[in-house]
Image 1 (cartoon, rainbow, N blue to C red):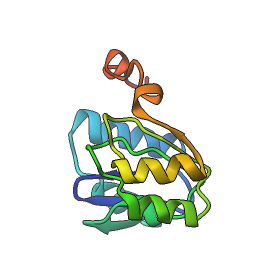
Image 2 (tube, rainbow, N blue to C red):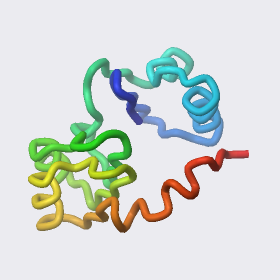
Image 3 (cartoon, one colour):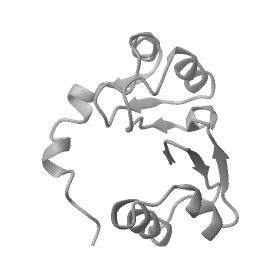
Image 4 (tube, rainbow, N blue to C red):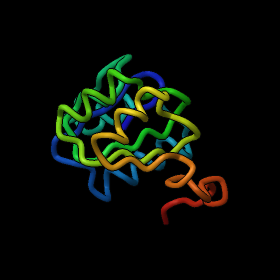
Length: 125
């Protein structure tokens, strides 16, 4: 997971306890993702970087326009990513989208994020 300052990587995964902490951190307190690594010491925080270099089967660019560029797309493909689903308006550059569409499953924002605005106010209970 990431924000505009960097990203966290938790090799152990993000369970329900960690997810609740993240939801409270980002939705209620509007805190920085770096706080996660202070609470969960086994995780790593990468200042000023994007998460696209971490090998993963699925990627969900959900922040800003063009956050995923052609180099990031090539890295995801090289690292064995199976699918990318956009969760923001145009988070992948045109060059990135072309690469992704030709190599792996790609769900553009128009399809994957349909209704995002309608449900954006929902929170975990």
